[in-house]
Image 1 (cartoon, one colour):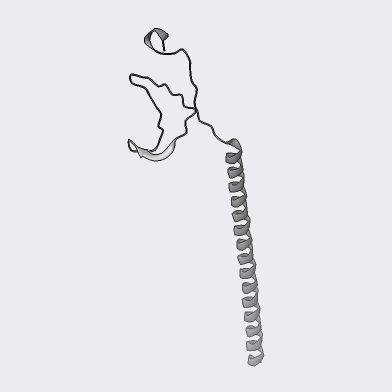
Image 2 (cartoon, rainbow, N blue to C red):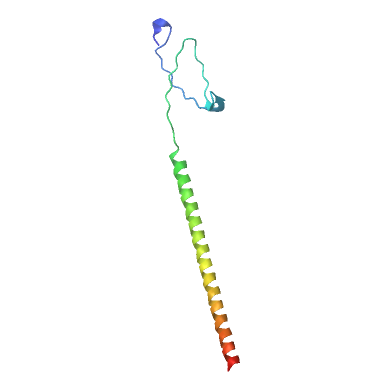
Length: 105
């Protein structure tokens, strides 16, 4: 970057975005112009959208809560149904016993 060797002291900051396309067995690549005997220095900065990540986590938690509530409701419904069936069976046995007792008399 020394002017006496044909370079400039100007530093150019550009942002390059990776493009989907295989290069060196990698799924993404970038392309840029580089003069003969030129040098390029890159700095990687990861930008994570915090709002999207937080929204996704909140949605996942809500979905999990819905599934939990639904599972608990189904379990409670099964328990009530089983209890009702047991009560019906018990009542039927009592009725059968009473009928059998009356026949014996």
